[in-house]
Image (spheres, rainbow, N blue to C red):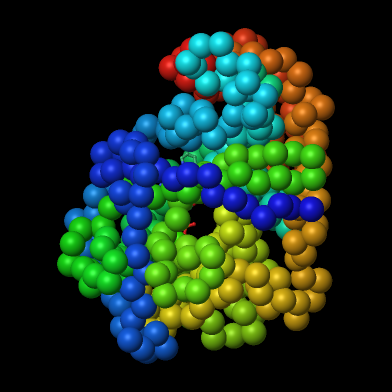
Length: 347
Ligand code: 0WD
Ligand code: CA
């Protein structure tokens, strides 16, 4: 049903969020000597964090840059035979292009009871581009964020630093400033039923000791689980997101740092992505991957049926709130939701 995701490329964003084709920013997993017994203080260096400029909406721009530099990846044999000039074909032979994070949200929608979503879709030369927009709720949540919440968001980035290095077999450097600007992203091609999809997702590190074909690892932090209630919530609401996010790009391993309320990680625990659906089976009424993929498939069908104007200046907005139906409206040509830049459409 969902074809094994295939990596077709990768790119990096440097400290200034400048795009580079390739693996410059790829990190290596440094497994601690005693993963079951560590002491990582995630609070360290909060004040010296180098922050990404959140006022800039980066849209799909980095994926589009990658596509422009790698047009040959999208050519069919037929294209190659009919090329009359040196320019590769403009047709991507791909139904959908988006960020991985958007697909994660769609997969989790059947079980989501808190956050809705807003997705802008543009059909351009036969490909549906999907861009996520912040909902009003997300904006007000962000504005109401407390210092404590901001510090806790920092803890996740800090954890990555304790367990990864820039050089293979290097030693992590928890004294250097943390930043959320640099990124390493993989580009994936996959297919769900009739829909071919190209998407990109950020990857935390590679594990050189891993014997599997895909050596990528995802880092997470989570509050240590003390009660049956916390265990249920972890399985019902957190593991579904972790599973969807990593499954989409074929990441086999998630390394979780379990922390206390004071931001200290005391132990690491591995989660094999493929086994997560089994771990949650002891829930009353557990979530199921089939339901997730069926929903995504139906949403993509709905988009294809609804978005009929092939014009990069026309955006269709799809909106959903928990327990409601999916809304859709076609916006006027040239609306503020347009997101495909001229440098891309004119290339
Ligand atoms: O719709 C999206 N997901 C967008 C992502 C819209 C516009 C831009 N981006 C950028 C992100 O800043 C990042 O560079 O794309 C890259 C990641 O895309 P993704 O892989 O599709 O995003 P997602 O799967 O939601 O998140 C992966 C990781 C996060 O790790 P955790 O463990 O927290 O899931 O990407 C990072 C974060 O480390 N990340 C961000 N970092 C800084 N600012 C952000 C953000 N807004 N979003 C994700
Ligand atoms: Ca992560």
